[in-house]
Image (cartoon, rainbow, N blue to C red):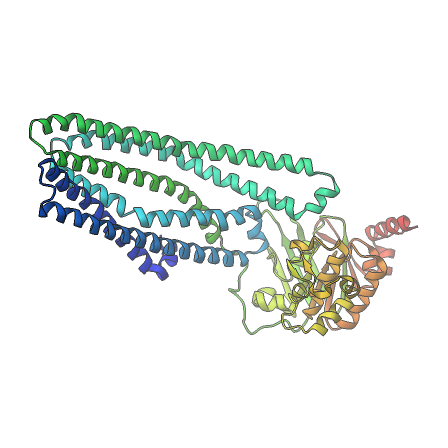
Length: 575
């Protein structure tokens, strides 16, 4: 509760005034039947035009207006409170996710995180809105109406001793069945969102492999699962309405059967019986409100648990050991006995006792088979992952001594999966430097061999990119990402197979630009093509998470079997 109160406190007046307004409406609802009873009794006695009757009718109109003001106020403040609560919670959850390391993100699917930030928080918002409007109103109306009914006729009130316990028993059973069904439904929403996101993000791959039918079938299965889970959960709500209606009508019939003879014998006036029936309806209606509140709470509890999982997930990479004043001024990188496992309980490490020192300003190539740990190794430098054993040093200092901001400001990474965002090309390039001038952007694009194709677009640098950059080719996307990295002017530049989609001539021009523009920066190039690394000062060969060779191109050709096999296979293909 303490965690949620953080989002309630700024809007506490709304959380207080809303229920007070609803109490005002409840008082009016309880008073109204009594005023109506006066009018009915006077009409039955033939004295409808007396001062008492006219006063009662006037008070009914005034009460109705007060009730309307209370109802509108309750709805307004309830909405303000719930919407602001949800907005702040969503903002905090989103900001918390931004602090996640890759390892934290791996625990949740992307679709699940989207669902938790949208659907789950919306469920909490709806619950809070309903809670503020019904939490005091429903029990308040039930208690007040019950007291009024007992005051009118204690013998008639005995019907409540039977109907209310039976109704509560049915409600409790339905809630017990409903909670796990609503929790399961939220999980199916996760699966559906993941399916949609995966398909939309990778639409080009889907189309190129003509897998539309497969993806449609996959979506149909996820949609059918959600439909079944939704029907299963909503059945509880469907059953609830007729059950409550049966109890309400049954109680009213019982009151008429018992109260009718009392009225005929002169023991009760017609208006009092009408007033009693009004209170019966109010009592049972308040139980309906409590029931729906509890049913909504079962879904909100499931949603709240899932949101709490996001907020409670502690980022495993933080600045606890960092010196805020320390910045990356030296591009020297050193791995000391580094080991890492993605799954901590598995026996086989992804990286196994890596020792490697890269001098500042050097160009280093890393080559090896797919899955040998190349990307994982370079991910340790900007602390996208943290080592399990050993230490990574940048500029002679442990990466943990830098704040994440200062470390990542000094390291620029062009990842294996190139990512662009919706917006103009210029806006995407300014991710490297928000303050970059138009001239600096054009220079960076020219060095990345992107300026020519950008100018070929009708709007040039103002050309809008689709989400993920799907309206440019793979090679164009890579060059834009390289230009973005160049704008950052980092001390360490990491290229993770980021020129695989460009031709060798273009790649050569890009490497030449690196030497000119980033002459003092350390450049680490992960590649599949030997041509991409053969001019490097040092080439590192990796296999199964270990370094199996280091040296220049000529040294490795002479001394390293793995490197020579890669070279022979690639030159043979080219031949």
